[in-house]
Image 1 (cartoon, rainbow, N blue to C red):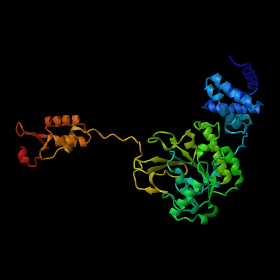
Image 2 (image 1 turned 90 degrees about the vertical axis):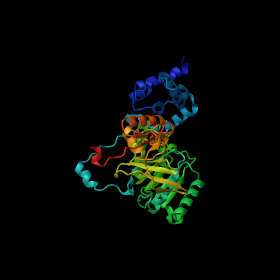
Image 3 (image 1 turned 60 degrees about the vertical axis):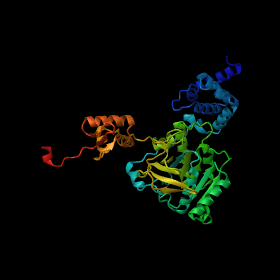
Image 4 (image 1 turned 120 degrees about the vertical axis):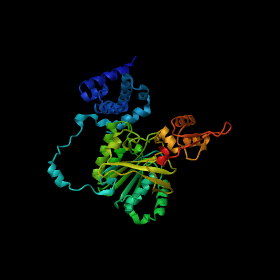
Length: 441
């Protein structure tokens, strides 16, 4: 049974949906581009808000729609979730721009190919050679607590001074770190330790390197766009957002490709207005990342890896304190992966095999064949069985297989068996090669 108040509310919503196809599609869950119910919740709240429904009605409607479609209705009873979703929708966040008819459409902007080529004769200015150009978006992905923020701080110092970063040439530019995870004191201590280690005078840098500590301010990406409107274009050429998961707006599903593509479109808009490259620091999913394509590494939808111009991942190496630095880039030739080692307070590029990612599946060695057994496990000097078996096992054979190979090799004449009496262990050797033709004929 449904309460009378809920019944009356549903009638009002259905009446509004009959006159609005967008609301109807949301109410009936006919939006295949919405992979999660959370997006429907946010969209429903936004659509109802535009029709004059109260915040309380929007919250109840979220529960009722979840109940009608069997989409975890218990979540719709959580006041913290519904209040947060309605607040996000009322601020035009997330997917409240679902009202396609109300979304502003820019004027047509096509140009002749010859005009485009004549106008843009060069690629954009390099910021990190081999990785990043001005106005591009770069993802830096690694597992939690992997010292990626230390790496970001070292990158910021390199960019502010023009010093090489892990063997990569960089341009000298002004940098802003917007950090929503660490306290002021923690950031200060790390920058001081790294600058001292690199012999960099922070006082000499002035505003070439700035930090905005956002911890506790609860600013999401839509807030950040407005927040950065206060910055004059060109003030910073690189802006680092650390950490991305805390910039994701409430109600936005990070596993939704459409939602993440929308957030990266917002990052592009910010980069264009500010005249800056944006570096996004994010974490991996739980579990083993070995064997995945770099663009598939990172918590959330795959669109995050595809939407960025450069996608950098740090993967743990088999060696302790070593990581593999791998990247997929859009406007540069492919970058070969390399290894870096953590030695406090810096990451250092080291000569190690980047293919030895921790957790990677090892290729199985080819089984020991009869021919290989006969060629590699015997000498011309006769030896007892145990020595032969141990040698075969060291080559990857089991004890059972080694004994079987020995019997077959003797039977096939590939190995000579030397019997020395009933109480003396037999010995085995590789047959001697006859070099004298007279001995053969």
